Length: 599
Image 1 (tube, rainbow, N blue to C red):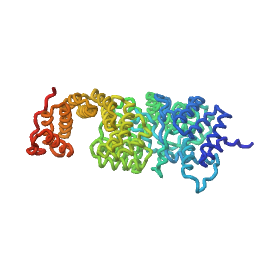
Image 2: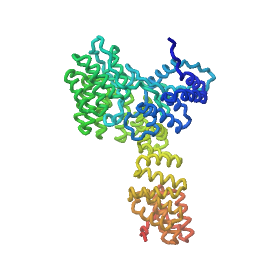
Image 3: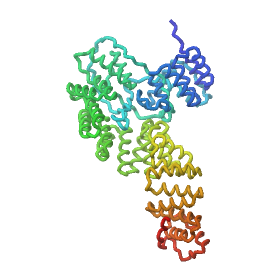
């Protein structure tokens, strides 16, 4: 019987040749013949030229296949399924996983060879289109990303340790498993270029914890496939089928994965019950203590002593179980005990110097303790070892911000916010960095994104107001300065900024009143310089030259490094125009006169 030809073969060949219009035409023909095939719509989304087209194609695919987790994830990443919690957040796959599936897809399609004259972008496009499809899960010896359960693992750490366990399953035939309603992985549709594509190589992944291949059991392969796809319910059912066929056998690793599935579903009571069963029958099975500790942390995150006790037992039984060290350190960090986390991190580096996560965590501790140079070294090393770990970019950006190297923070923060758009703090940092660089419109955009997530943010409102002022968008600046002052009414920056805008709008009486309010909050010579300067200007516009002269003299009397030199020159010019003899005024020496009371 002849093998049916893949109808997408000519589409893939056209993409490889760089003939995207031709590929779209071919797909349109396929859709015309078979409009209810969601796979064609997903392929069409990879060829979309705009986000609107991609969203429309994905929504049609979702209409045809409403429970498909991959379609939902693609729409979620593009902000089209806000609030949808039926699928876990997408993780960035390891490069080797993507390459395997790319080779498999390309081999199945048998595309034509690319000549040396082919535009290199063509190869990139076929890579992106192909890796956007058919992400299958490599079972043994590939990396497992730790489930995105924030309660369980605030940092989203991946499982890095491995425990070798002998198979307890007899090599006998068992009944075929009952099929659970489960769909194999379908095209993954990233909203952005996968991070591994920027990478020549990454660190060597380590096997799954407690993983023992059981090729004689189809249910096991199905269970692990569901497990690595975060389909916890199906995984539980498949694991249970294996357990039911071997009633006389206690299978700690199978039970472990089943308990982990329950934990990731939030069914902590059932997870604890199974972990307790494993520990009762196999007290030397280290991963069970790790899993029970993670579950207890979900239930009682402040009871860190009991949680860490579990992790300590896990690493005592298996000193090479890296995850036990990392979770213990993370537990202490989560409750602010940064220094207590250090020994665990140092031990983790000792047993696994090739892992990026311990360096990341040590950088977190060093940042908290103000050791910024050391933090930068460790954060950079972690990022270089694994550029797919997104929190590393956020950490680098934060460190550069604390070091007042705002320009250096832009690149890592841009990379982070390209993939993570639900945190306002990185957008504030970006806004500050853009403003420092003079990119005020970029600053406005960044602050606006932060405010779209949380509108009562003092820093974001202030930063956007200052950027609007720099762009001479005065009405918008006033609105944000007023919001800033409502959020925090007793701060200097909001009031001085508002007074500048009012002065620019020639509302001199209002500017004077606002700068006089500011006078109550100027704590540094630099802040006093701003008060004297803007109040003097406002007073002159109001015809009160004599009072303004006192502020010009007070400005000159401030320490030289606190006042811009052009302001000093301007002060002398104004005093000369008023007929004031400034020859006796010595900068930085003359006593500051009493402040003018607010009328």
